Image 1: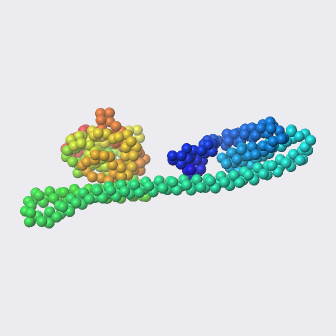
Image 2 (image 1 turned 180 degrees about the vertical axis):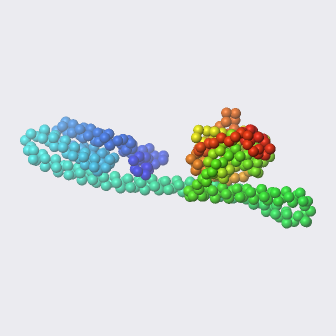
Image 3 (image 1 turned 30 degrees about the vertical axis):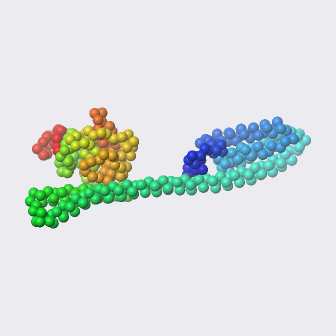
Length: 398
């Protein structure tokens, strides 16, 4: 038999049918104190009625123990003792009614002795109840600890698998490039080939840096030592710079549609949000499909969206996709260890906002990030960036 930590909802072990006693106890545990007391009173009245019907020939005093035990075991000694008093009083009244010759003093003495006996039984039941509740609390805590340990163990296995896999690839690429460069004279490499190997080393080192930064940020967020360093930031300019400076595959065009707005946010954290969302969209969508980044006004803040034209996300995965080390099937492109989206949501919540995922009506997925704060519009004609109109216009990059 198992139960919740507070012992209020006992249940049978898996695969076992709960007994009638367990069902009664569970039913009473879900009821209020007045309801349980009323049930005890009704049972006391029923015992008294049977007592009257059977008469003095048959003693059925043990029936009064039923409401006493029921109330005591489900609600504790205080209400149990109250039920004892009711039962003793009912038996005293019946005794006086059955035998008018019995003096009031004798009836009261019998009732007192009967009450003390009932109380002794109720106190024993209360002790059993307290011991059972403690046992259930310990069992519930052990079950919770066991579940937590299983979750942590699974998380550890996932982390080790993800880190070992995603660290191995860039490290192997760096080692291979370095070994090739060390034998460049023997291999007769051209200058262009050397530059290609150096660029491959830089890209792999960037992947390693990205993984390490994600792990460090996640650890700092778990410790609660990260706070947003707010400053007025042009979100359109941030998106434009992240897209242009990011090492994204050329076969994934990125489209920017951004209102020129100024919001008080942490520039670095917003850059990480945009970069992680773009990396996730590119990793899980087929080559050649467009990824669109949108920034627009929203009620009391700004709404940042990254939308793709991929296969979409299964409904069950949407519920857990922002948990650390969760990765969808069929990932391709940039590597990762499954904490990018978790960081997106945590950074958004540090700002008092949130992140969520939706299906696009035209197909694909849209990740939304709401950043609350006073939004100040910027002039649509400002200093040109990258020889294109300000971010109010659309731009194709890739």
